[in-house]
Each structure stands twice: as structure tokens, then as C-alpha cells.
Picture (cartoon, rainbow, N blue to C red):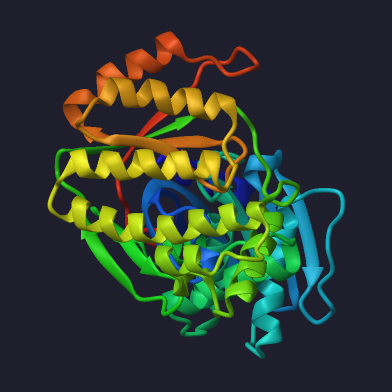
Length: 384
């Protein structure tokens, strides 16, 4: 039994006095390329990772839903499914659970009471979607316990709606969709308009390295929502449903009358969409040099046009890229303003890249970076 499984089962048994009947998992994710394109109906290329949230559960005979959070000192939440579901103001984590339950009930789905314990090892505040992992895991658990027959895509959409409407972060669909639909050994090229996803095989020798800058970030309180509003304003200017519908030539030809800052935001999205498509093709044939070039251009665009990197992240990317050389690439990943860098390279380069980061990088606080070497995992599933 894994340490995480032991922890969530122990939390459940301590809180409720019996063993859980159901145990499910949902992974975090790292986005290899395609940043802030998802809510513009564009393309993203994430993979699910081997860091995840587990939910242990048993049904109840009444309408109460009780939750214990092992990662928050066994903090508790309890609410009645027969009453309007309101926000908790004294802690952040209950809203992610309450939000997804509220979405199920609003759809008219019958959900019985339950006892839940939640534990995860997805780093929080690092841009690896710990929140989506939690949302999808809770939904998958309730889906199974109540026989709701929701598809993985339906679960992802409900989780996104909960984060948008209940939690208050206007995220796109990528995080929840890859957590629900990830495939082991693959990235997914996701069309965020149609929700079609093409598996892209990761080369056997490819290392997926995630490096935490130790610069904390928080999407709800950051400029994330502002960036989304700017992108929507640009789409209105060009009279298109979303920036996904623009090519670079059309963007440049119709720029008259659009303020320069909004044009920069749009240019990032338009060029990032093409880079993501090109990166999927490069990855599929194992062309790590081409992939590295595209990742470098993506980071430059996030820094200069979308303005969501910070100096520490830029420095970390530079250090990693220098150590990788022409054998792969590095870029910021996630919503921005801190968090993590993703680096792709042959396994043989991992030790040298780790050593270079340890030697040359310090966060503004003086902290060293945290490095994880991950594997692409499957999406939400039952734990056996």
C-alpha cells in the first residue's frame, strides 16, 4: 500500500470509525506547451503525472456529506445536500468539494449522503492543478457511488464549472480534462473547442522534469482573470468567436484600433496555438531539438507578450535550457506569476540538469528549487 493510500485510509478510519468502501484517484498534470490557449478555444498539450489526489468514501443513509482533509490537519467540513450549498469563508479547500457537489445537484442528479476523506501529493500553488485533481477525484467518487454514469468528459466539464462559478477562477477546460482523461505514457493534444484529444506517445527515453521555482502563485488573486478578459476583448475586436479562429496574418492585418497591450495578449495566444500543434508533431517523431525550439519560443511569448513570467522563473528556464542544450527544452508551465518550469530531455541528461539547477538557482527567498521527474499516468480511476 502506498504512503498516500495509507494516509487517506487512516484519515477516514480515524474520522468515521470504519473502513471506506470506495477509493478513487485523480492525477495532477503538467502542461508541456499551450499556455492560456484553453479558454480561447485553442490547443494544449498536457500529460497527467504520477502525483494525485485520493478520495476514500462510504455512503450514508441520510443527506449529510461529511469530509475530512488529511492535508489540512484533518480539517472537517459538513453540509446537507437537501439545503442550498453555500461557501465556507474560513478555509479554501471546502469550496472545491462543495462546488462540484452543487454542480451535480443543479443538474438534477441524485446524490446520496456520504463520508469522504481526501489526501493528495500534488504540490499546491505550483501550477500542477492540485485543485482540478481534487475536483475530478470527488466527482469520480460520487459518480461511482451513485451510479451516475457520467463520462470522463462530463466529469471534467462539471469540475470546470465548479471552479469557474463557485470557486471564482475562470480557468479553461485543460486541467480537469487531462485529470479525467489522461493516458499512461502519452501526452494529449486537446482541442479545447471540440474537446477531442489525440494521444501523443512520449518517447521511452524522454524525461519529464518539473522544477518548482519556490515562488508561490495564486490564480484567483492574480491577473489570470484579467488576461482572460483581454483575450475576450481582442476576439470581439476581430469579430471572431475566440482567438482560436485567428491566424497570425489576420491578427496583424486587423490590428488597427486595437490597443497595443491587448494586441500583445492576442498575439501570444495565436502564435501559441500554432506552436502547440507543431510541438505535438515534433514529439510524436521524437524530434527533441525542434521541440526545444518551440518551448523556448513559448516561454519568450509568455514573458514578452502575455507578461506572466517573473524574473526568477526566467532565470530558472535559462539555467535548465543551458544544461539541456539542443536535446530538449524548458519553459514556464501553468497560469503564471511563479510556480513551475517544465523541462523535456533524454533520461541521460537528467542528472546534469538537476546539478546545474542546484548550483546556479536560488529563489528570491533563498530557497533551492524542488525537482520532480515524472511519468505520464492515466486519468481518474478506481484504486485497487
